[in-house]
Length: 221
Image (cartoon, rainbow, N blue to C red; front, side, top):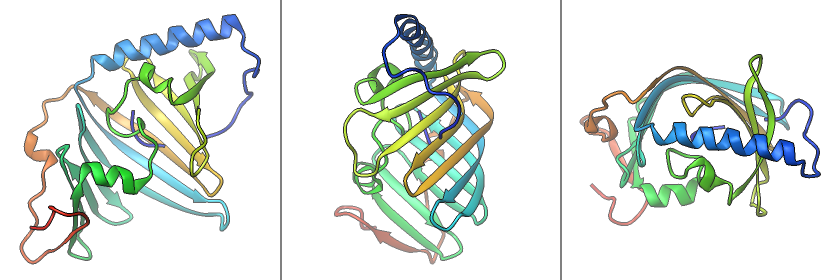
């Protein structure tokens, strides 16, 4: 599951056996589909809306993921930027500043503060049920399968996550991450499941003259 809510009529907060049974069936299908995924590529458009200022920023790019935790995200607009990881090291390249930030993937996860299980392929759908409450918002031909997630335990920044899923392929088509401060709406386009991806795609060799900034011990060039 990767990257980031709220509209429509909520299901009743009182557990309904029929609704729970349907939710279980949907999640089991998603889990089966997800287990078949070894790698995935897609283009995306992501819009971040800041609630206080009503400002918005839209970015576009292309993403590559390979189990268990290799990824490459190429931001194209509004400015070029690259972040990639081979599962051990992480590189964030800012070409307009000619800067390269280097860190361990483990440390970057802690610093980012992003909810565990919602980045790369860290956790299965069924495994995520231990961390998040799932609600089935829609399961129809017209709207597709829409799930709403919220953390079971109190978090530093409360959020909800709305997922519009392709349950046959086991991938999200649209995600909306909502907090008190901002909303991130991500739309996924042209997904390709299980392409052959070169390992070098998830490593970065900086161009000559680029300043390298290590964020943690052992990351110095």
